[in-house]
Length: 507
Image 1: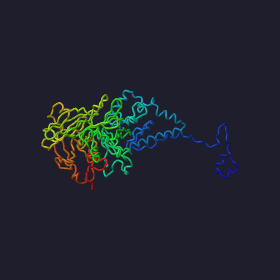
Image 2: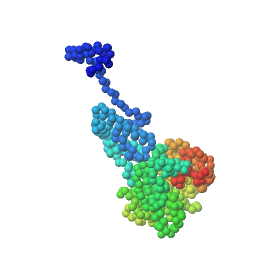
Image 3: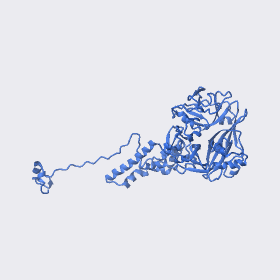
Image 4: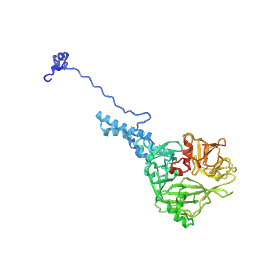
């Protein structure tokens, strides 16, 4: 104690200082210190619904740039958890190398010790269900990420990674892709699960959407008309020659198109994507206004159209790398379902002169105005009956076998949307969408409910319903927009670029 310390001590403290400090070899005069209790390990606060994953998951955002906001918050929480645990370990005398080894060592993880064959089997089945589930599957642990291929870099050249069930969601209110108010983001929704994700795609500043084959975006440059095939979730892009290169080829076939009509004749297309064993991507386009099909592969300098021409390309549907089309007959002539395969690697130059393969015919007395649609992994034909009062539904496989008496009366929870492009959605996860029904977009013909309407046909009781009151051809759509109108707008790719909801005339 220094000088002047006694003035600061109480009388009781002075009395204790008079006692001897050491007695019988023990420090009995000094005040006893309390034994320090070990501090409890701190745990980070994580909100409800956030699952703590190993530290290997901190690389998860690199594999899924298309994840939604909730999942991004989960990933950030996992990264924050790892950083906090590392700080606590360092405070307790640990090392970051020891902590990293404890969290990421595959030998100490029961998940990482899964057999390779079983891991490949699970990964293939998860990938067959949905690409987003596959990315979540790879985010479980570091071992699973190492043993399974990453979608980035293989999004287009590997058909397994094509997001077939995903469709770009039309926002409406003039919010087209690339609108400044969207800040470069575009929303996509899953036709089977109803899941929504938001992706940043700045390419829409100078591109427009033509089609969405297998979930891939078929884009056209607004100036050079160059075609690009974009995977919206991985960012992989495949380049194709400008679409304007097809017009000199058509001129050689006797089909002359003025420069003012070039855009109109190449705006309404249906695409089909195929990949060979060498990794060459081939794109086939069904040109509805020209009643022809054209193709181009990676590395080509121009598009090659077919030398033959159909009577009327009424409907087109990509399936399994091939393009199925309905060649509509005139008058009482039956319509034909044709299959157009991509060119063979050995002789691609003969593709333009080889006629398409006829799959089946559609008798007029059974089916009128037929449309192709894929539902439950089956190719279906949808159209009106002979009296144009009911909707009839056939399997193409039944017509191929000569069975014309079996009509489908139920498609389960599926709902079919028939328009310029046809698709099937699962009503189980999409509210306001009625299952076992068919929605027909009456743009021109009129049908049962009249021109500019959206009638809904119930397959269960064979009745017609009206989805909305009004006429989307001559007047703006009534508000508020239901989810059915957003889904129906996906059948008309033209509205994707305008940001409108199924309306030819805005108020």
